[in-house]
Structures are given as C-alpha cells and as structure tokens.
Image 1: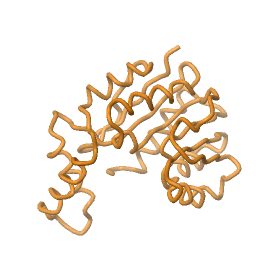
Image 2: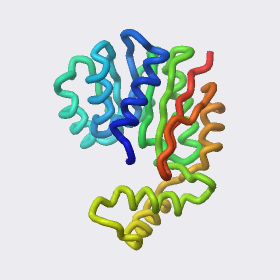
Image 3: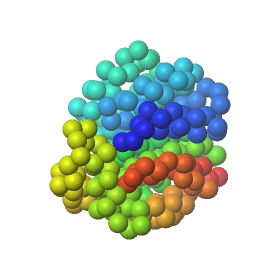
Image 4: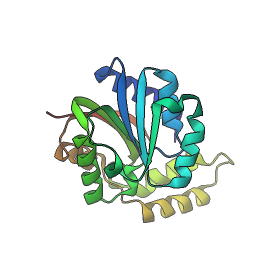
Length: 203
C-alpha cells in the first residue's frame, strides 16, 4: 500500500483531533498489528482493543505489540466480539474491501454502536474509482511489485483481487458511512485503488 507508514500517522492524527488526551481506541481488523504498534508508539497515553478473525494474524499482532502489551487487548473474531464500551475512536484499515455491501454496512453500524458521540472513525481500503476497479487494481498491483515492471503480472494480480473483493465506488462508500450513522465523511487519503475517509459518530 503506498505510504502505509504515513497512513498510520495520518490516522493517529485524525483520531487525536477528537481524542486529544488519554483514549481507548477500537481497531477492527487488527491484522498483524502494524497499526497497533504505530499508534501505541505515537500515543503512550492510549489503550487499544483489537479484533481480528484470524488467530495467525493475532499471533503476529501480539508479537508486534510486546513492548506495549499492557495497553493492548486482542480478541479473536469480528467487531461483534468487541465490548459495547464507548470507545474514543476506531479504525478499520484494509478490511472492509473483503466484505460485501450488506456486511460492510452491518460492520460499520456495529462500530458506531461502540463509539462515543463525536468520536472519529478512520477507514481505508481498496475501492473502484470511476467504476473501473480493474484499471486501478492493476496500478496498485504494479506499485506493489518491487521485482520490476511486469504489466502481465500486474493485470493477473488485479484480476484475482477483482474476483474476490466486492469493491464499491468512493461515493457509495461515503453513503454507507452515512447510513451507518456517521457524519461528515471526508476523504483524506487516495493512492491508486486505495481510498481513506474520516467520519464522526453521530449523536
């Protein structure tokens, strides 16, 4: 993903606008723990609850966050496993593109149920800009291929992603955020097929 470390830094800054002091942050799709590690290093006054359905990925996340393990709770499962506590902010990075539209909306609503009014949600994942998922996925695949420029290989990788990822156009992503109860969705990140938004939890 282009600028992944910068995306993590931007995400932390956006969350901090609504949670400038000690905060409890929900990380949906905690994956290998890269964002948890980045957030924890940047904000020693924050606590985290991370959820992910993959035990193998959670093992990676535990190893990545050993230095701050006392501030990180990791739970196996989807957002439904997260407590109905009022979190001060939430992230869902590189996760929602795996879910179809109905499950994506349900997940966003469940995240919203767990947030304080006015808390920020930051999301980022593959989309279909201009309705042309294939073109933009090919560009993303070419960027990710550090072995060299191979258009055939990039197109093959893009086809594989397009077949398994139910991608939405950016305006449809913003509409889902509104339907889920979030306000003022704003695009803050764009890189080939990837888009990222920040929105606030409605009252």
